[in-house]
Amino acid sequence: MQRSCDTAGFLRRSASSWFDGRLDRGLECAKAAAAGRRQDAPELYDLAQFWYVGLLIKARELESGRRVLDAVEATRSGAPSERMTAVSHNVRGSLLFAMGSVDGAMAEISTGLRIAEGCGDRSLRPPSYVVLALGALRRADMRACRHFVDKLADEALLGYFGQAPGAWVAAQAVEARSGVESAASLIAGIVTNPVVLRQLLVSEPAAASWLVRVCGKLGADDLAKIAVDAATAVAAEQPEFDVIRGSARHAAGLLEKDAVKLREAAEIHPDRWCAASAREDLASLLAARSSERDRTIRILESVLDTYAAVSATRDAARVVNKLREYGVRRRTARNVECEGVVPHGLTSTEFAVAELVSQGNTNNEVGRQLFISRHTVAFHLKKVFQKMNITSRVELAAAWKMVS
Image (tube, rainbow, N blue to C red; front, side, top):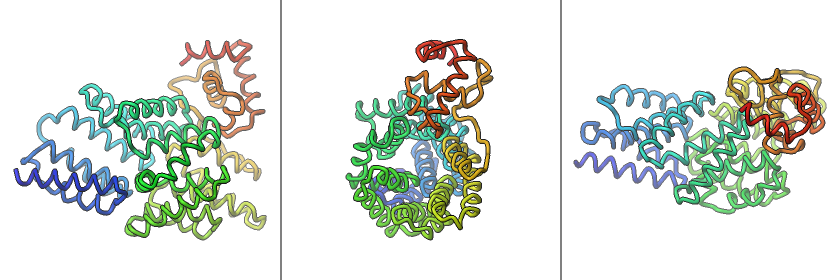
């Protein structure tokens, strides 16, 4: 009994530290909780192991997380509860997402979510919706992204959602669909709330640089500086985590237009997507110098390869367009995921355009989401009309319901 009480106590302290933005203390207590004995309280032991893995993932200590997860699943005897089975799928999905396997991550998390909903456990909904929305955003599946963001909003109304990552992913979805101005209030709300901002910075390694980037688009240099100062402070408190240091260096490099810091961020960052993002920002900075043309192209090509490897379709499309400006033509995966054969003989881009137009997006909004011009959208839409034998967006919306 004493051992199980110790495990529960360590878990509580770990969760409290984590939500205060102290990954170091949270991880230390989580490790202590995971050191308990399974026979004392099997479900509490499993929960402690999964929580420990979850924080290892946040620290991007992915190999350690994978070993612990494999070990706990190998040693479990008997039939685990539905709740623990759901948690197991969720944690493995989070691990896969951090490793860059978006499709596998979304499949695991969707399975865990179904099991959790079947047994009435609501606790997994918010973190599951966050990863599913981020995965959909990376794959440029804006319909699915908005669906999961709406689910997050529902959880907030029901009192089950208070996580900083949810606000961040919602802001990203709004910015992708309607432009950064539409997300301005959400962005300001995140940056000016110290508790939310701090939690976000240790939760999502891509958050600090994204906040600086969008604040720059809004002309809100004061907000960008708040984000950078907060990221720098968190990194100074917890220097042992490359994931936090890399994120802070990336954000500072963006704000200060410092190529050295951006290069250091790319070298430090253990997250493949984040490292590629830092290299992309470095290439954008170098692009202003004509003498750096060849180097810029080389960096962008390496960034494209990484984005493609981690299924970041939307980001890859953006880099393809940047390379095209240099006369370098590279292909990327289709922009919107669709199962089976593409209907009506549509190309991948035509399918993506039809999907977004059918949802009521304007040509400008479609172009923003697919990183193509509105004129290119109009060209592809004309081809869609011809192939589907229709003449209007209204007809497309009606016909697309039967397709999807």
